[in-house]
Length: 77
Image (cartoon, rainbow, N blue to C red):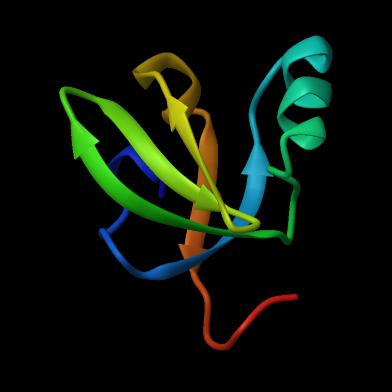
């Protein structure tokens, strides 16, 4: 599911980044990597505020719809 419709305050595992190479590299530099963990803190009008590696990150709707996640079964390191 895209992170834009993911549940709030649930640990998620990033399964796929459907982004161009430049944007994908930028997201990886921010800590958003495939098999990494992420948590949606809040959502408003399609924009998403996420918790990534103890930091908060705001994603606009265009990017948030292209980050695919699943619910994590356990803590991801």
